[in-house]
Image (cartoon, rainbow over the protein chains, first blue to last red):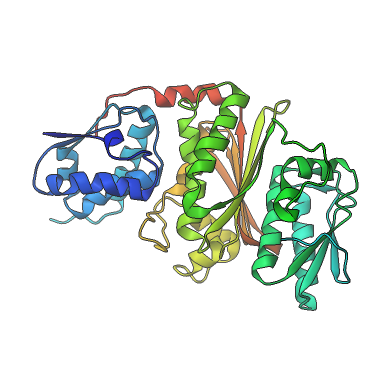
Length: 99
Length: 305
């Protein structure tokens, strides 16, 4: 398992571009079946653009069940957890399932 | 640069009390005055101004920028009259911004405000992180770490400008009202407006319905690759449900108000006005007496899908 500490890679976990950097670090690993832990150490909250880019975009490289299996979030707050879960729940409710 | 010399042109008088309610008349009159005769210059008369809310400061700045982009010269009249309104604007940095000099020698930024700022849409970070949030932190005596959730909500407003407005500039102004226990933050862009953006996807909607559509979770105009339709929804949900604050949006003829509902959710009302706001104005009203609730949201919690 690989651990990615967000603060090691972006100054502010703020914009879509910041999230894109994190996505670039984890997407290939998730697609390849590896487990990735993303640490929010030192970060209390992030906007939706960051979550969209870093995590929701993973649904373009792996099905939602696989993303849930392979992506672990650590050192996060209630705010961050709710935002990530809300975004994934919304996408899963509005994405047609395939057999 | 705005001229402060009187010349013959259309003149529009600022209302005595420049707030959300009177802003419509001023902007409507200014737009009509310029459009009716297609004049290339217009004067704003400050003689009657006695009070102006943050949203008025931003709307006034927005209107000036709108005319500047159209090549219409804006002149100021009677701004040197020592009214409370003119003094407030001078303290807010308004005249220094547009005349390159303050009007009254003793004018200084007030501790209860963050001076008017025009920012590049893709470069809002210094303003948000180094001016606005430290100022809020100081006013409410809470750390910027504790206020991070509020900061991210305000980032949703700035992202909306950066990703959707079609222009690269916006303006912002904020004031703390300690007796009301409210912080009012007004942010505006001079762009195409939300209704125009929404109608690229749903052409049949009127302006107020476009605003309702824009705040739906998941609705996206895909005007930008960075866009997945969550920002305004996130802002409104958090401000109304966690802070019990309000969010007001004006864009085009549309006007949308999001307030806390009696059941703990969000109540949204909207309507079409008889005047057009050029661009988009977002007015966030934060309650300072409920900010301590937000400490729960930054508590560490084990993530579980």
